[in-house]
Image 1 (cartoon, helix red, strand yellow):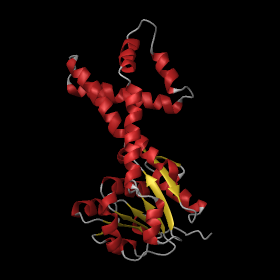
Image 2 (cartoon, rainbow, N blue to C red):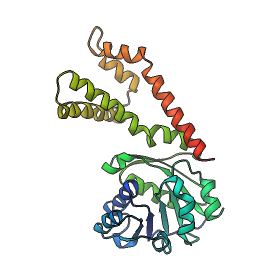
Image 3 (cartoon, rainbow, N blue to C red):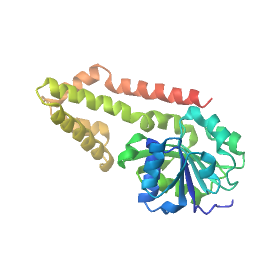
Image 4 (cartoon, rainbow, N blue to C red):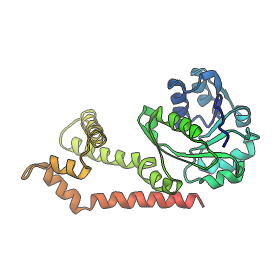
Length: 270
């Protein structure tokens, strides 16, 4: 298997996620800014890229023509139009897609069965440097090339390689998961306001609590279930709240939400 030496990269789509990827590559020193090219129809998005000393084009074909790594960061429904616009890419180029629901074989249909395809599901906390990305690839991608892609997506959070068969559930958990967490935080904020807090204070207490609890899960060997038990002193206040959540099937609702999201991801891949 031939490994492509990745010296130049192109990012097609410089919106929120494409912009986060670009910032990660530049700030992480993965490639020098002059070796990165962007493409977006938006003047605003191109201007943001150029502030990072990255050359940005309005036409995708101008960005990808000489790239060793091409990152597709557009909406899934834009894929067909993009392929009509993108033109030729290097045969040896590694193609990275963050298009939700679009499977590797779909990209192979466009770029060829011998093309190097990496599928990634990032999430929006990448915008603040704490994203989570699931990554899978076809057999044409070498270990070194995959390691480079993992390094890019680790530059603004964490990244893990998974089998493509798990990408729909990854979408349901981490890809869309921030939305569920925001709903939970919003519920805490509402409760705080109803209890007499001003909105700013309620937001601080709610968001910092979620952040701290997440860190405890990541930094501890204790299971989330046991961490919950540890907070619930017998006859105390927490256990009364937990009883309500359990009676309402809180965890089951989350499971159902993730399953619905994963099912939609499967449908988008057909």
